Image (cartoon, rainbow, N blue to C red; front, side, top):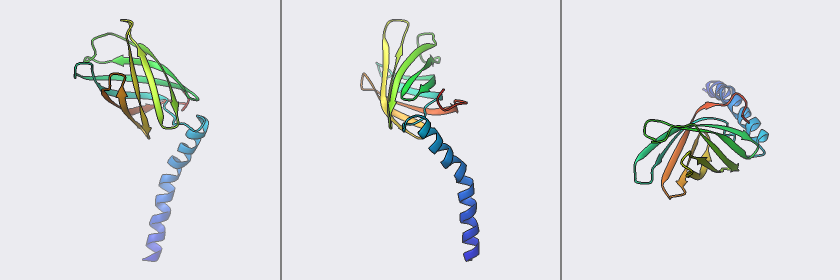
Length: 138
């Protein structure tokens, strides 16, 4: 029985070790902040309570975020639109500059492959990572 527990423990360590080491590498390469480079599926509540979704491609240079925002059929304006933002530890903020001259601002927290928070209009938003960037800082 003791031998079986030891074997199972060793297998679990071997399975989880690459992910743990990769997370350390990503965190270290971004100055101790979360690595957000990749494509995110964003959902939020619009100004008038409507459900909105978009694909957000984030590039990261240390704590600076840039990229593009592409709304889907639920978003009335065509895109893509540029984004700019920052990440500090588990805190994130980014703004989308729309062609109408307006901007959407999202502020929240990062937890692994998920983000959530509120918009500047105090509406709820969340995002889930769909694809990692080939390089964590892209």
